[in-house]
Amino acid sequence: MNENQEKTTHFGYKTVAETDKASMVADVFHSVAAKYDVMNDLMSFGIHRLWKRQTIASSGVRKGHHVLDLAGGTGDLTAKFSQLVGDTGQVVLGDINSSMLKVGREKLHNLGLVGNIDYVQMNAEALPFPDNSFDLITIAFGLRNVTDKDKALRSMYRILKPGGRLLVLEFSKPEHEVLSKAYDFYSFNLLPTMGKLVANDGDSYKYLAESIRMHPDQDTLKSMMEDAGFEQTTYQNLTGGIVALHRGFKY
Amino acid sequence: MLTNFIVALVERILNTSLKLDTTLIDKLEPVSHKRLLIDIRDWQQQFLLVFTKQGIHLYSTNEQQFDCMISGDIETLLALKNPAMLTQLIRQDKLDLQGDLNIAQGFSNAFSAMDIDWPEHLSRYLGDAPAQQLWQIMQRAKHQALVTDNKVTATLTQLCQDELKVTIHPLELDQFKQQTRQLKGQVAQLEQRINQLLQIH
Image (cartoon, rainbow over all chains, first blue to last red):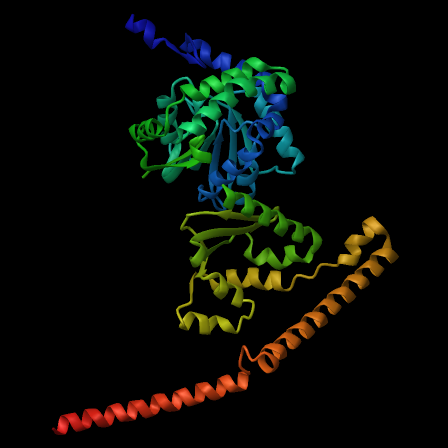
């Protein structure tokens, strides 16, 4: 029985075999990649841009830094980091999903951002980099899709340089009951309908809403980061806790 | 989030100004990738300003890593348009500067020397002659608005000082200040004499 429990995880509200989750998540993102940016703007009313701005403002990134933008998707953060680290720095846009990477690469090339960006398909649980490689790692709206989050956090800790920081931008638990109710109604009723109408894919957006509810809350994620070795771990609630930005350092 | 939104708007305006005055990019080149932290004390807000070859980046932040930090009230920071005020404001503890001062000066000089060729930009939409005419009309309107503003201010001042007597004339104020200073001096002398008399007895 115990062995059985160890081998399962959740995919939204469903319980699935651990080995199947990555491919199921991959299917979701293969399906939404082409309309990912449009849907992000539509679903969040453009507020995701402000959440990402806050992430960059908290990054302390500067010229010459090496940055890993994990689950970087269509490269919103990478685009800014690439400009801020300059010619002497390097940004790695990492994603487990080839379709998302393809969309991201095309978008960044069209923006004229070339030269200091590498595109790497990778699994966050086993990051293919040597120890102490990066000054900054960000993972925005990606951690909840990772099968073994603790393993992924430990892997991120390993490749961070001493003095480096991890920023986790992720959906979280709203602080107020009223907001929570309104958010639930929006997520489970309006969101899948919008997904169906715009991206012709209601199921993927149903998974999005479910996966957000299954993701650890602010304090749980903070202690998971501390367990992985991160120090001075803090979080900042954005838009009433709908999203939280966690920050931890490696010393 | 509202601050973030406003900062994003300001960043967009700054980047639009880069497109409108292309010489601004050359002027900002010396401060490229240098981080200027502007701490507005009375707003309790800090803003990070960075110029890169792709544009200007402006963020509201709590980060303490900077190449130059300038801290003061909003009025003090606005007074820095006049560089001669710099030393005076630092001496009065109204302004705090840390790091490389050249970075703050680099940004300040670049923006104060900004010169947007509006007729040139307008001509793309209107054609050369209408753009030039529109620009001249706008310049005349601006000049007229300034003249009218001066006139209204002068009339209102006269009305308040001479007709309605609700305010005093600056000369009267100076005279009052002078008399107050004299009175202060006399009171100090009197205080000294009383103290002397008290010591004798």
